[in-house]
Length: 149
Image (tube, rainbow, N blue to C red; front, side, top):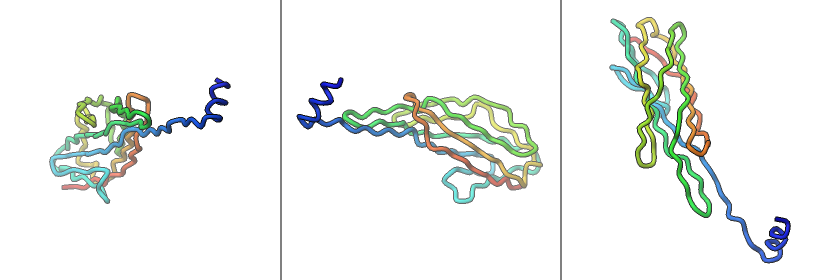
């Protein structure tokens, strides 16, 4: 190895630079009365005041990428999602992965059920994904205003 390094210095060989980036993720949270997402400037969600609201959660993740001598993509392999609403127990649920070309959609298997008393309130969300190469995505930390509809 030492001889190789000396030979490279003497002959001017170069080492290809590489860069890696994990998946880019976005989240959409939906109820019967609308949606909230990480792209909203002020995310909010309307809840049913006459009964419980079923909330669906979807995370879209672009593939991670390593660039250099050759480019390699790696689909998101898993997501870690933490959702909390004060005074409301939210049971864990697996996320079903639906891979497609260039991205994977993760959908919560069971909806979150929020009682009318959750509004007005705030839902806090934390999401991160990891691709098949172990690269982490951007982190989403989101506060969603819960409003009575």
